Every structure is written in structure tokens, then in C-alpha cells.
Image 1 (cartoon, rainbow, N blue to C red):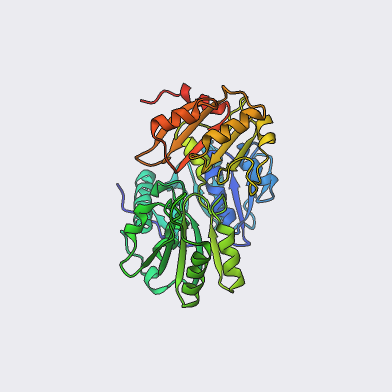
Image 2: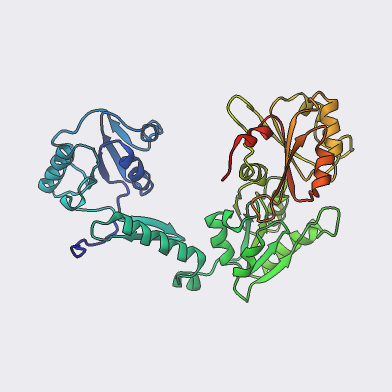
Length: 409
């Protein structure tokens, strides 16, 4: 293989004309980063993929619905020849050479005057890798380095010299599997001085924290001991006021029955800055890993997520169980294990058929995941027989039967 002869450089394309010839899948991959860089993109192609067309419809680029013509690169700072016709790509590169415009040629990289590196981002770093015409190698190295940066097995001095400012980050940890936290959530967790953590947050992530990080247990065990919400709010505010960066790590998504906004309000009232990082909600992710789609074409056109914190008929209940009983779609019940018999009876009484399929998933996404499939009439007995305990997500509706058709090897 020839030695790498390219000179890797970062281009400031903001406000500058970039011409892209070809609107296929290669363009679909390259265009988002160009538009994000602020380039004034003009696309020349008779046809495009639906995604590229949507970018044009949204005003992210200008689409000229025609073939390439000599002179199209006038005034361009950068060009990309991305068609599936080698003659067109060669003509674009020839014009670029005459016009002294750097040009990428997708079908034959060495014939262009520029190449696109395998690139990725991490915490303000833009990483680019070139490998002398071996794009798979470039992509593999890029992915390995990014994984190392995110897992902190590759050193990033910027993390040591750019300490996060005092404040609070409300981070959704996802349904339980530590790999399902968002990239941003994991990055902020790695910068924390203090972590206030719930019982349902991804526990394995705590083992990755540096020794100096203080961990405050804010476990809220159903029907057992519970840290007062006021105490949690005070811990967030007091630590942030002491000049520390505090991560409030919660399970699922902080705003889906997670009291997240109560904590945001407490910080706002105290003048403490808050960053909110949404998480993958357990209401949809847990059924998904158990082969239960909460919607399915021709089966369910509606999804309602319901708290089972208080039973039907309770004076504090805000749920219209009669309305839920009339629905034909999907009901996702959270925190409903202990009172599942009452919830099932309320739905049947309100009109939901007793043989409506039900799936109850305990410890979704975790090694200890357990699934029980039943009906509204039988779920209380079947869940008890299976020893189902919180946390569990209950899916009620025809979609609960769809997953039974999936054959897992």
C-alpha cells in the first residue's frame, strides 16, 4: 500500500459555498456534517434519496434538480463528486482542478484533490482518520479511539484541565443496562464531583467513577424506606452551591414518572444552573427488548403510559380508568406490580375484554430479565406464580401477543 500522502486539515466552511454533485446514499452520509458545519450547500442531482430530499425541503440545502454542467463550481470553496457515473465524477474533478477548488471523488478517492476522513466527535473533539485508501481501516480505528475516549481508556487531557462548572446535570440512565445510557450522560457522569443516584439507575456505572467522587444514595424502594424528595433537592442545591458539579443519575427518563422536573424547579428556585439529559424511557425500551412493540401497524394506533403509584379510586389518583377501559390500543403500566389485580379489574369493569393480552417484564434489559405473558383476567395469578417483583413494566393490549410470533435462536 502506498504511503499516506494527504495533509489532514480542518476547513472552516461556515457561510461558504460547497457544491455536492449526486444525491444518492453517499451524499446522504456526507451532507449532515457539512450542513452542521454551517456550509452553504448546493446539491446538483436529478434525483435524491428521500432523506436528502427532506433536507432540501427543510431548507438545509439548495437542490438543483438537474445533471451536472461545467461551471457549476464557480464560486465554490469545496466540492464533492458523489455520483455513480465515473465520467461525471471525472468531469467534476477536472473543473475543480482548473478552478483550484479542492474536490472529493467518492468512487475513486486517489483521483480527487481531497479525501473525506473517517470522522467522529467526542466532547468537543473532532477526530479524523485517513489510511491511504482503506476506508474500513480508517473507520475501525476511528471507532476504537472514540470507544476508548468514551470509556476513559484513552487519555484526554482536556478532561483534566477543563473542569465542569458547578451546577447540576439531571441525567436519565436508561432502563438498566449500563450500555443504554446516552453518550452525553456518560460523559457528564465521568466529570462529576458528586453523584446522587437512584436504585434503578445503572449500578455498574458507579464502579467507573474516580475515587474522589462522592456518591449519595437516593434510593426510593417501593413501599419501603425512601429518601425524602426535599432531602434529595437539598443535596443537589447544597453541593452545587459549594462549587461542585453534581450529576443526578436516575433510571429511565427523568421526566417520565421520575420526579425530574421537581428537582429542576428546586434548583431553579435556588439559582443553581441545571442541564437536562433525557434518557431512554423504560416504558418503551423494556417492552422492546422483550419483543413487545408498544405500537404495531394494524394492531395499535395509540399508547398511554400510566402510573400505578396509587390504585384506582384513590383520592390522589389522576387516572381516568373508565376512559382507559374504552381504549383499543396499548396501556403501559409503570409501578403496577403490587396492585396489578386492582388495575386489571378496573380495566375489565370499564369495558376492556378479560382476555386482552398482557405482558409483564421484570428487570428489563438486565441479566435477570423475566417475562410473563398472560391476560387481564389471569395476570395477577400468573405474575404471582412467576415471582414477579418490582421493577416491572406491564403492557396491556393486543401488541402483547405480537412478540410471541418472534422466533429467537
